Image (cartoon, rainbow, N blue to C red; front, top):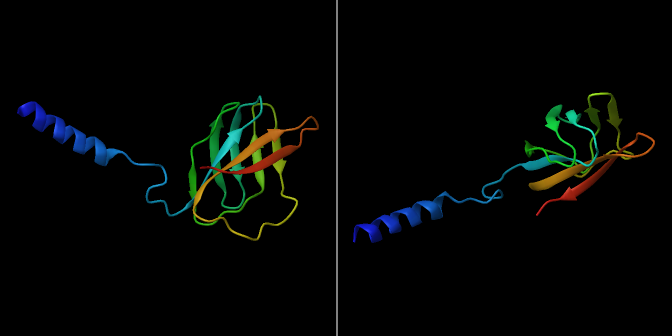
Length: 121
């Protein structure tokens, strides 16, 4: 009988301790994907002066929350050997709804930053 009671209690604890990343979100959450061969020591999002640090090649940063964010933003990227700047071609006007998003960053052959916006599911 004690085993059944213990199993029931543990089941309830496990059931209520599990949460999805989208439970109770109330902000725009953006992460950085480093799609280059360089270590990003720092990626600074100019719109809110937010800094993501130490993103390895082909890795993701943690999500950071924003009250207001856009599909594109000016970026400054620092690597061990150089820095890169990205400025959007158009000034963004529509803010993103609450959710999870990724700025995928790549550097082309001419050393230009290529930013791809993705909606995460």
